[in-house]
Length: 388
Image (cartoon, rainbow, N blue to C red):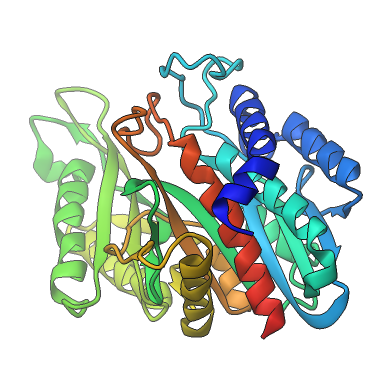
């Protein structure tokens, strides 16, 4: 089915769904009305589904008429705590909550792809699982769906994220690391407080914290191979109570980002050493708490090749572009850790329709005419994967 035929048959449904989800955003783990609407649409289509993941996740199944492998397609459903400033007639009706990252597009395009695949069941080999995932923004939804069996019997997975930096009509697809791991850390420092006029009687937690921020930067600059991009950011420092009191406690909070699975363990180990030894130098004590939020998103070579071929067929021979790796995180990486997978960044940017604002902006818009490309790509990947 070409784009013109798909738009004629499914275009109105796609836009209706997208605008409904955009007007009714819900935060991570609380996607109750969103989930209810998805289930109702699946029921209308006669597509079987079951609850899967937290309270709102849904796993739907389309069984092809011919035997074959099983692929999982993912669309995340949660919105952000952002006040919408677009002025669109279908703007958010929930104050302070907005689909500012395009997940409304993911739900609606996956639903429309489900409708298209359901119509093509007689030509479909194998099984397509459709994961309507909650809580991507807090990196809990994918793990919960996996724990609830979403990947049981699955041979491969594919996801799409709309992307404002990619122009409409193009799709960014490349093998290897595409998005970074995102970890969070907290460092609690214990010094010894006292009078600001007598620092020699104290252990100044402010001095310790300042030294620690500087020393931590040497991990990236001096311990990680320069060709392996990494970030260590201390985003928050909380220290001191009064201008003439030596601080007794300090707290640092921050994030690390990296693209190689090798750094997954090493980053924490390196930080632990720097934190402990820096504190010891100043006669203080410090504790590092390190939480791994999402893994690096690494596109499988074979799945990426299949997806590029599908994009060239479904969208156009010149539609695929490559862009630099992104230091943002994506919890689709948990699916891709378990089975071969790929994620595509679908172009929705364009000046003519005002789609010039970045993800997470209150003015964020997408070129709705480009959304059918996601529907076609989901469908073509599923058809090609199961035909292989």
